[in-house]
Image (cartoon, rainbow, N blue to C red; front, side):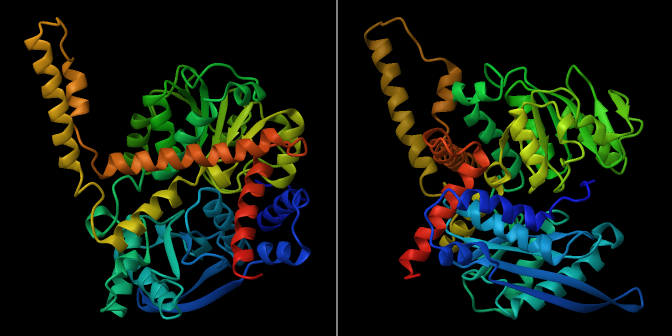
Length: 477
């Protein structure tokens, strides 16, 4: 838990903003305009469930409308409160600016434990919450576009989209009112994996720069790096799976609510995930690794890369001194408190900040929104044309080889890969990879070119705030 005497998550975001703003040439008025949250709508609504009326409290916060629509997830959790939602909305503003998606920042939350309700009840609750937001244009393809977050997923987004279209029957772009929908309901391939895939692409880009790797007292590439993942939800699972299966990382520990699994030789992430699904999420009894009851203590074990991928505030003043990882990538929003950030920086730990590291979700949400507005699946028009052009080239090379007896042939593996046109998933992954590379390079340039910028977090804030400021200036502010 977060140590006492620490700023709240909201205050942490403001303090981190202030660290960057001090290094920028902004007028006090513009700085204040960018910092403050524009509006927060609080709704309390009733739903008749199990023979009585239950009252629920929900929020939708809009931090900045420098670009519209505004974008940000809706989370279902008992911890949801106005301060948290406003802090997350601010992070969305900066995140969208950093990865150059044309959105302002927003966030929503419903104070509810989704595990307490069955599917039909949850649908009633979600639809009523959506109804309250839709009728105030707080869900709208051109004004405010939610997405999944903690406690929500494709199912909830499909309910929200359907609710919007029931209330706006003539809006041809209605499906674009929310992203993260299942593919059969207007979603896009690769959205579920997007945030975890973005974490993988962020680490790959970091390890392409030996100078940056050296700052974290590491060498080489991702192959063989020891990784600890805190939280095996959607983001942590996909990040751990891709890094272990595709990049040669060894995930030596996974930390969950009820403890941690540890294996110095590397866990089989898919096997762990299937065990958790089959046994209701309990790690106890998993046969292929050591169970540690005090999961939080495993955060402090030696490793090369630490990936906090669950809640905010898990690394705080109370444990930051004992963290041994030289490189931390924030897959969750705000997992390191402001106080812990100070301690870790003094120790020389390199932190790849949440604003960048978990931007894969909003990036692929942007692709889904564009797909919904264009009403056509990516790759549908060009895929077979690509394949036909590639086939012409391969056939000509093979003809030259046989006619002129050159003695070489194309490998079957090359032919198969070269002759496959890009489908939607390939195009989404390509777009995400490009986005993560470009955004890292924009942060890195500030980090390395300015002596007063000590870390990637401040660099990320400077890039983001500069872009938001440019947009406001162009509006005459």
